[in-house]
Length: 395
Image (cartoon, rainbow, N blue to C red; front, top):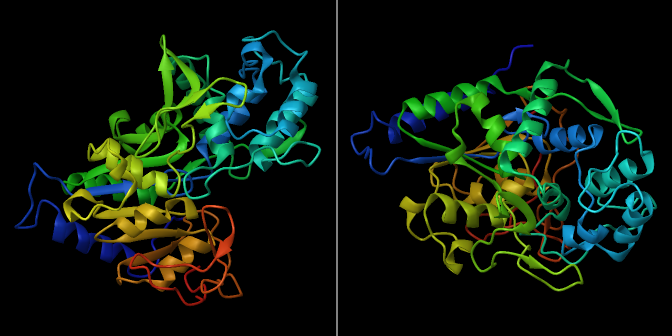
């Protein structure tokens, strides 16, 4: 099936490149315009973090935590999840040893349920108490479960998962932990072409993803983006191996966790407001608390941003030029995109298996967005204005 741009979207992107790229009279090669892409479901169809999690589960790659204490793996993990993981996995392997999840279905199912559903197999919440604008504990948990491995080891798993997922047929499924899950990923060819054209036109092109850093690095080579232009979830490293703690950004310090319920940091990842923070820190070099805030200096913001999900809304709002949204019917992002506050938002259906039109308007004026506590609230645009309800028109 041909992957094609919708309407005049590509023309608008070309206009941006002409206006801001090497052909512009004001182009400055020492201050290249910044283009930032989300990764999963923006550059590729499906999720490379999921692909790696499923691969590691199928191949006995997750390690039993130190002292068999699952509290080390997340500051937000609940007592119910700790009990469920203890029961399912506690006797399966020694501390630090690989869990036999290819054969021990109870352990595999519990890990899968906590990661995919954020719940135990018994239906209890697996995580509690996080800031919904800064963290998604199950996304963070994949990075944290890489603890005990070196970057090279993680990238070997990610590469094997990538090879399988690119080779498998579209809609391929696999069974892990007794559950059918997705087993394929595809690069969006129009996005790959756009990235190449942006680079040729003198843009500095980065990926900012809520998948783990070493995994996204492996995949980014598929579209010509080097590892030093990838920002994913970053673990604290020690002795050449990843630990359970996460690097800090803005007002959040590098993490600590004693496994007894005492933790600092570990409360922010490259997710919603955390994506802005990490763009400001990793790309623009701001290691202060102010990295959490939108920069007043327009030259220290992306010119172009692309995303598909509510996790991308903050850094898309920050972009000074065009904001490209891949339509997956994610309410907060679509409210912003269709609200089109500055006239700079463009919407494109997914290039593979686009969704049908959402038949009811997005409830932007009442409940389409979430606040830090996870409560449903009205949506506001990048200028702080209330967004009216929006119909789904690009599908």
